[in-house]
Image (cartoon, rainbow, N blue to C red; front, side, top):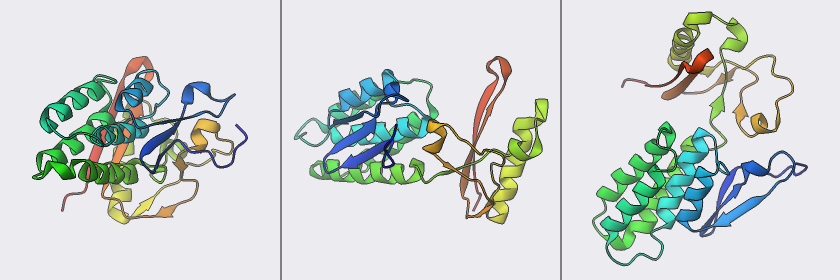
Length: 216
């Protein structure tokens, strides 16, 4: 990839444009579509992959499916919801996004506004999970703490939430092409944190993902 203007996903006018990750790193190929089924296939075939992108693309797919719908809105929503949910049944961010869209749809009084309201919610999900979400790893500074690495990272993350900063991911000097697409924090960053996602991936498939939200 030689382009300096590449992106993972973008909504352009009335369609979704996304980078086909199956072609990386030799080719930079973008797919443009306004068809929810094509987006579902992209998730299944790993053209779209990564937890945030799966959620974002599914949200836009749901919204796009309502562009030309004039009747049977509830039946249509349920059909598209089930189709997208089937693409990655264990993906947490996929169901987070789909359920947010479902909550919005259930509150719609005038179905003629369905597309715009769902589109607005999809944009909000993109803003949450887009490329601006900061990513770091506390293990880069603490070293491997073996059996307690995941628990201690949650504690460190809560301290960052309480004190309004993000600790850096140190010693990562040459990230690969995939890592460059996300907002890796390389220096301590002052930022208000209301919610964080802590991922822990252990040997033998002992994995966990924990979402912590600040209590108001």
